Length: 625
Image 1 (cartoon, rainbow, N blue to C red):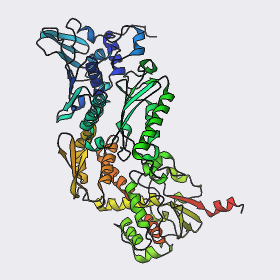
Image 2 (image 1 turned 60 degrees about the vertical axis):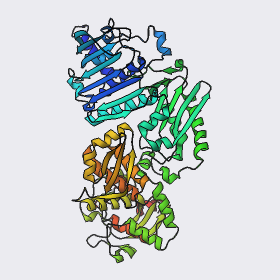
Image 3 (image 1 turned 180 degrees about the horizontal axis):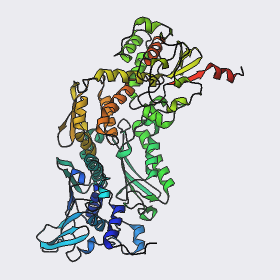
Image 4 (image 1 turned 90 degrees about the vertical axis):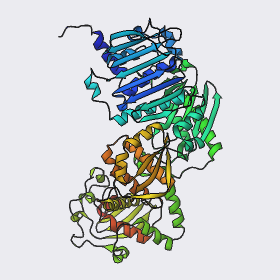
């Protein structure tokens, strides 16, 4: 056995840094929180290359005494607590006394600080946790800390950092949340391109929401202000017609600290419920004040999560109040089951993915279904644009594959019940996998098209089938001309949060290749002036905003080169006929005819099954034949 030995100070500090400092955003968080605790009302943050090259935080707070500045960068040194009891009644953001020492241990750092009562300040240089120079300097009151070459001495950690845009987006979101939590502080964030965000610092949360999210979100705010039992809540909800594709815009501040907590999230999302379409989340900005003894902020090394000693009670109170407020402000109108994606027979995840933006599509479908005559024919032309079939092919009730025996079907239709589709994602290798003869029987619950085959019954999901047809048509349409655009009659302003704007600017070349034209418009807005030709001519403002939201959501989790396909899939899903829409016999026949000419008739672009087979033998067994 190796001998037991005490770790060196340097190794111990680097290990400690791994718990607290995960990425550049961790550095910014710790430094900015120190600035807030120091009483600053002006905090400037500058970053380069997503913080990987350098991070600088400058404030006008009380500064660090020249006699204590070296002590501030040693482990377990803090001015915020003096006994264990202080942890249970915290009023500061930081308290552990590890942050500065941890940052210094894995970077090259320059510190400038002066207290207002001192004639001059101190400039300190630290490398890998060791002070390498110290000098007196004439400085303004406050503190400026520059962190360079993060993880220069721990390359294993550096290689796990994400791409520059991702790290920059994390920092932007962090500053956004802190600025919303502390509207009395003037925050600015700059990167190598210039100013990313700036807040007025007038102490008004509404002003900060306007400066960070723009006019449209501001105009749809709903004030929430109540005090019940041990809980006091103030802030803003959003009208349900404004929503986002992720939870990143749900902001909770507990006693002035931006936090995550599952009870708060559940309270908000359950209160909104079916007022939002599936896969959409509200924007909320809520300050929750309660006795610090009821909050444990020490359950996570970076303090980003909190635990309530009465979590269920907090959830119930908040949910009740939000529900009542939404009813008074927006009425009782809710989305239908089809719009929320709660389809029977489908798991919630699939249902949510299946309905990105359906409100406008459904309104169109309802209008078109009023007249089964010419309106139905017009919709059929719209649904199947991009592929011409012989009229006899459409009108025929029965179909026969000329080069395939009538009883020949693919592995998808083999005798193994209805679950065999789940792992079959690759398209068939040849036409021998297509069904032989089949006859359209009709529609089941406005969801499935029923096809009678030589040895049983096929249930075709009308949405998944139509989505596959449209997707294949779009792929053919853009082949060799992926950057063709059509100008919008009226350019569309995009009021995005700072981190969303950063994402769009980072992927701007890829968006241009797809056919989007997006330019900067003022300090905080972008303007969409052109879209790809494959998007519908009648794509309205709401649909285009949904597409931008989808781009933002996908850009966080996939590579840039995959965005093109994701937008095609999204567009196909949005245009496809939905569950609940009644189809004419001609439309059902055409969907069936086109489906079995696609590249993969068995899976939609999201890889969901399209066809369920019930063999005649299976059906006979059910009645003991």
